[in-house]
Length: 144
Image (cartoon, rainbow, N blue to C red; front, side, top):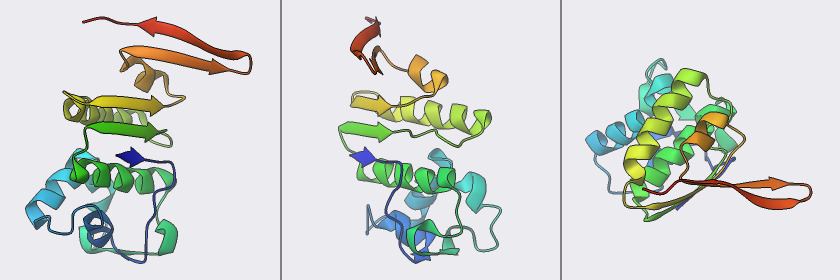
């Protein structure tokens, strides 16, 4: 499953946008995933919560909020391979830490490829490949 920097968001409720990944998801499961992906961190403050209508392309949301909806969709799909493109960009340190804890728990038994500039997210990796203008180098490898 892929969670990119600009997830596709359509005009509809936050819940409808989440259900794009799992149309049959129960309200309870949807809320649990929204909690795990830190969507509820902002949705709980909205008058209608997950039933709040957002605009096309996530109009009305910040970049970090839109990314969290994309990550929640990924969790709903339950893939064995996670491709994450800057999943913690534009997040405050507390939200980033909480989201990385969720991803670490979800990633058990799965393969994860993450593109990031975040030092915190980089520390989460078992193997780091650093890309520079001059090429790529294996920065570190941790063996269990």
